Picture (cartoon, rainbow, N blue to C red):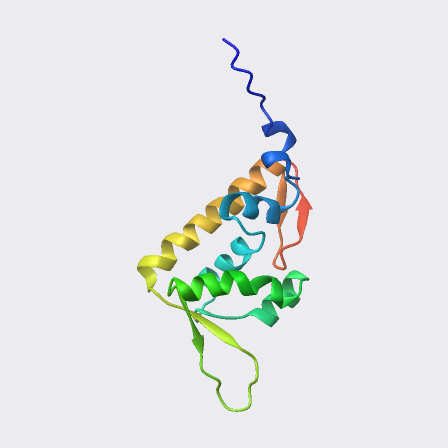
Length: 134
């Protein structure tokens, strides 16, 4: 029986370019940069993230991360780190403990792995994609 549904999966996520992990983040989380921010907090050894450094590493302006961090602050998933000495950079620290961030880290890793498998890409340390044989 044909219900008139069209399979768009071969064309990408809701018409999005699957070569863009940020489009996947937008579809999954409602924001193109949420996955990057969650990944940064989950993988930070000391739990601290500086949005300026993250932005430079990812090749974007730090302002793209502000809405995500505001949401995480409102949910008390992160806190602002008070300034230390002359360091004018704003740092944020994950909150909520391992019970929150370990599963989030596994979710992010799982999404990255799934994305890499379905697109035949692999992400390097700075978030750039490279094609790999599948």
